Image 1 (cartoon, rainbow, N blue to C red):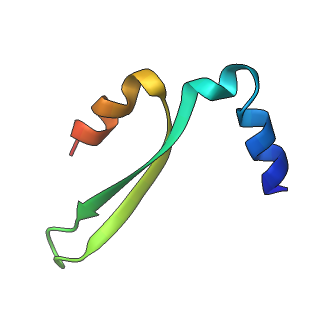
Image 2: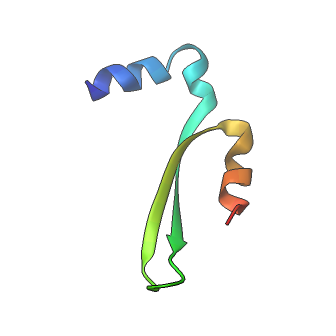
Amino acid sequence: MAKKVVATLKTGKGKEFSKVIKMVKNPDTGSYQFKEEVVHNDHIKDFLKEK
């Protein structure tokens, strides 16, 4: 099933999006969590800047 998703993203408008993974520190416990999202290539820097 994953192969179909990857193949779909490589054709057409799927090339305009990227999966971005950001590591965020939890202020309460001090542990790190990962926030991942599929973002348009023009908005990657905005996603990484937000807290």
